[in-house]
Length: 485
Image (cartoon, rainbow, N blue to C red; front, side, top):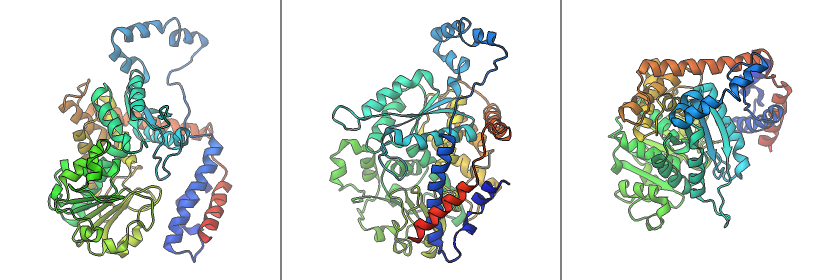
């Protein structure tokens, strides 16, 4: 193991011995931010373009380009679906964002989202064997307002070049309209990872957490903290999968959602939130302590913490309570604090704590399955099927209170998930290609292993240089200084 990799794997031991758990947690976050700066500057970003065909002599450009390529152009002209086989379109995803809600940082300007979108592209390649392009756009109209119709038109224009579109970090309420219109009007899958992706992995985590505490989804009381694209979609998928709407209470920044929230009802842009108002919280409970009393699970995707979720909310929850605090980059409450308050199973969106409930185990397999069968959309049922495949995969290898989810390094989970999604697309009649489960699984596995082997070869041959180990110390020094202050 290299020096830099060893230090990253044993980070806790490099913080002062007198640091509290909270200081170490904050220090790790600060460290990762400074480390990201050094690494991105060293590499100049994370993604490059490499040909997938050979150049055996310069005569081959007559095949790959003109005049030979004329045959490809005219074949695709006469049958556009040939583009999935004769170009890279069939394995290509556009990651589209206007960067108006980037992780926990809010509106970062269009270019400000490139770091996240390149990261998404890197994960798609390494985990799903998918080629992806980071595309950050300016969605402002002449009035300076962020216009959902501009995003819709842009994505529609992109369709001929990509097999799918991953929407990312678009603020509400625009995100609702953008997704719903494009899902219905595009001929390729348009997937909003902050909504459907988060919904999928959170449902998977809940399924297994409920198994650990021996409770059933149709019997539990659920409280949601936050009512953005993520939590409203999570609630919708959980209800579709069997949760009782009358036992669900959701909160936004102004209070609980219920049928008396006229402010939401009057604004048609928030129609997804109004659906939650109509379906849930029939007693119009407005107090968070009252809502949490007897609750079996608290699911939060809101403001980065810590101290957003209070221990006093967790104290009155039911026995063996589940807390999923998934704000990024810092959870609404640290896991140790949630457990001290009485939670039995605690999940966050981060990989340096147990039970990472993060989209990274969802979208690579889901989009891969959709691409392999040439799906025209990703339905809610496909997302739910993916959630159950994730839960099932983890259960087969064993689950416990600190291990309810598959992890990114379990590479078999992605073809397993792709198979489930692809078969569901075929069943629902939204796939262009009908394949067997084994065919989908084997194709996904082949592409994923090849992507990993390509990266390994580039690293082994030092086309990708290992960064200097002193970057770790520089980042640690800055993190320790920031926390100590």
